[in-house]
Image (cartoon, rainbow, N blue to C red; front, side, top):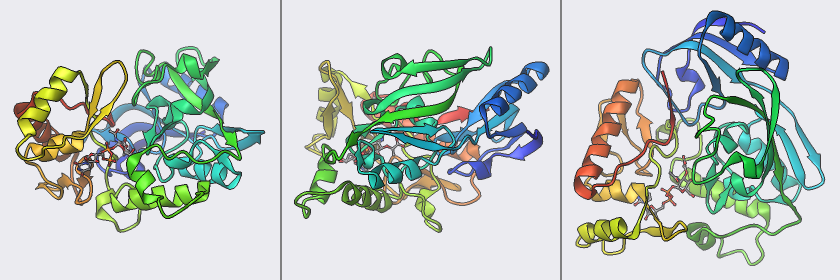
Length: 342
Ligand code: EPU
């Protein structure tokens, strides 16, 4: 395995901003991962694990440690379970599941990034979350290099959260994820917008759901398409805030004049998930808003974009501007969704 110095990280991210990694290496095997950890330990360097770079904001100054790009490959099917190496392209895995008539991932079509990132932030869209299908996760413990396996239960999943970005952040490097799917199962159409878009199909196939999800994502600039300026983003830049009924009612009251029907989704335990995109718009910031080389996608208010030549400082200035506006108008803090590095 080769260790490279001062490698620009921006090209490894979908947002395309940020400085270099002091050290950079690609791990094609579990042994490589261990070798990378050893290299970092000898030099007392922090390690950052890079997957598809689709949910990542790299600082302009870069990262002074070792960036380990997980490039482990391989997919195996065992009945209705797919075992996938962490470095596999996520959408390629979804395509494979759909082609094999395995249900459970079809609504997660068109999401950029790699397999290894999906349990970390419990990737979810259009009514599915990987928490529903992950059977187990294999990983290497960063401090010891020893293998570890976690059942779905042990992953501690909740909305955009798991032990791997929660209490155990940085403790493990994921190497393999197994998904338990439903052989010959019918597609899931729980998400209202997807349901509406599928109305023309009487008995939709997994492939039709996949195609429709990709079309919806593309219409929102959430599909990586060459030459589409709206897709130079890290997907949703903020989480949808989950609040209690009192806060939800207060927010609805404040926006009653401009938007009488506030989008709200029950999130269990009487909590309500609000739409961050809607909050931003109600705070007076519209799609297509620009600040220097940074901006908001012209098709989805939650996607901050690099309009070309942006710096991380510009993205952060825009982030803070949006947060302040929403906080002032509604008293609701917006939490950043992508991971910050450096
Ligand atoms: N909305 C707006 N303006 C917009 C977009 C949406 O007001 O520009 C409001 C509308 O009321 C709309 C509602 O928000 O009905 C929901 O919009 P959308 O279906 O686009 O979903 P979202 O809540 O904005 C979440 C995820 C996305 C995921 C979609 C679809 C988060 C932070 N984001 O977005 O995930 O693709 O649902 O399930 O939970 C990501 O995490 O990076 C991501 C793209």
